[in-house]
Length: 273
Image (cartoon, rainbow, N blue to C red; front, side, top):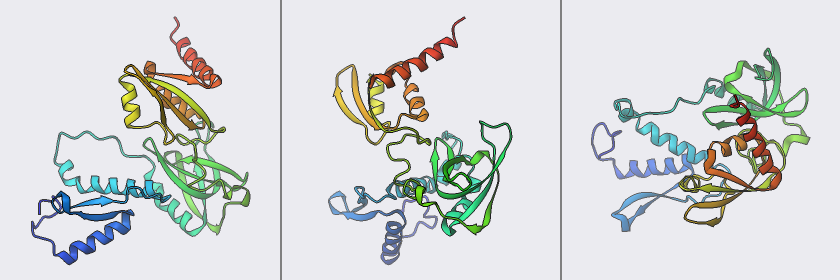
């Protein structure tokens, strides 16, 4: 009755309500239960679901909640939002290629090249990271995994030929395996155990929102917390760790601590007059 989406402010028939619940459960891979001890309120259950699509369903559910607030947000001047992810206009054709096992011909401008180049890829999956969409697949000429940022794609089209990931890359190039032990969009190096110390109050923020899913607490004091993560030491990870400024210190392993120290020294050199 009180929902902003209920324009007519009329009760929903029990049969319709049950049908909506079953549809929502199927769409978002959740379970809706009536909590009798909470005044017969309906609550979400099944958060322990270990489905490989769990994060996608949670993202969809979160997006749906935002969508349901659209009218209130649109007419409310006291809301500040981030810019939407870029490159989304290419998503439909990429999904078509994945669903139909078709290749993609991409005219792409890399930041490491002076002019755009053409690629043909067999796409495997897409990923959203820090307001950017990426498509990950196998570049068919070199038979190697490639990552393309959608906002740097000048032109994209479906090929008339069906392409499949090669046998040597099929096990790695799937949603479950490719980003295992990774932070960010890059997949470089072998995972290592990294220990770091976060000083108060930054330790509380890192505890609330872990840097990586493997994050655990080694010890906690009034002034700091020592954490450990098991992750590949990629550029994206180093960038994230350094974003905490002087409130975070790498404890080990020594070679990774030295790499961070060298990076900080290079930064300092930029400010030497």
